[in-house]
Length: 430
Image (cartoon, rainbow, N blue to C red; front, top):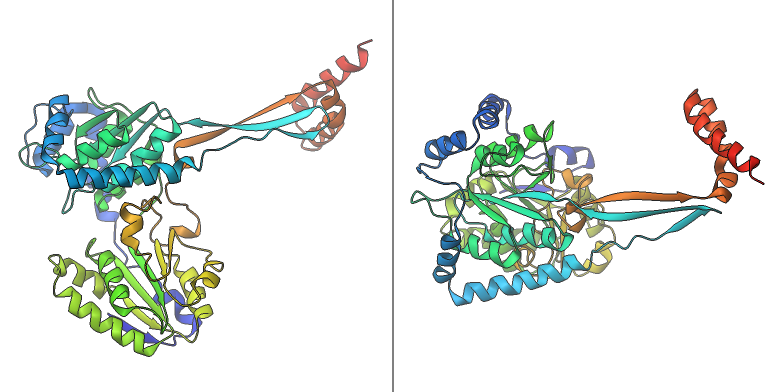
């Protein structure tokens, strides 16, 4: 990992720049797959499953028999962990239920909002190098609380045509309606356009590789909403002399093992902590089964020494990390200074892994600096706010003339007329 000591603020933009990936070469390939799926439905998805996932399927839908079989293949210990995580995720997201308040903006004018669930949502769960059954809980649990009537899940099968049993058990726990064997671009296309088997959804959620991300961005232009733009996963840790170097190194590595394009950033006020963390990273890295992946991620990463924790927070806000761990002595004070971050972990014991799995917060978060403008997945991600208003005769008297004047000055005569006829009607009533 590269070390930077007391960098000038003028260099922060350079230091917080993510590794750039040229997506232009993917665009044509992704669009070609999407066009094929739009035109040929299931046949195209099955062809691409054979081509990309190396499996010949007779059906895309996961059967009830396969769901039942999965229950027998998952250990009681893992089921208990899934249940605990689901309970905490449910409790945290249920606390976000919206309560619309009726507001009388003027006498006779009452306005309010109602939260309405998106009826049909699609969840993409990668297979790849690790089965992300935790993401099933993170995405499906708030969808169920919100009241989405159809929760459709796509995930790639293995070469025997089976979905990882923990993914299926998590899907059943969280209330997923239908599960389909489809990965990559073909899964995104199937949910965006609909096929003979896979229903068309109104919004797609979930992480994935660069092809999945490119497909989500392309279908979002015309066909379906998506949760957020996304890039590789990342963490920023703010530490001082009081921080536990072993903990910090473990946190950095837990993020680095996600993938070779992940990024980790340590910002510290202590030279001793910087060296101790660097040594711990090397020691722990050697013990990891995914050390080759983690090492590539560390090559993109940075250790930064700054003057004080206030400067550390300013640098962190400039970086806008997906995950932010503040394990300094003054973490409570620094928490108030967080402006740009996806999810924040406070104190020496709040490891990012807790939020990834079981504390209750959502782990589907904005990356690549998008935390400057986007929230992580939450209950509102699955809802729309519909506004209502009721206006009676008193309300027309309260705001009618203002509406006429504004419409007239915008030269929208019909807008003015819609109010004028009501004013006249009220004036003519005995």
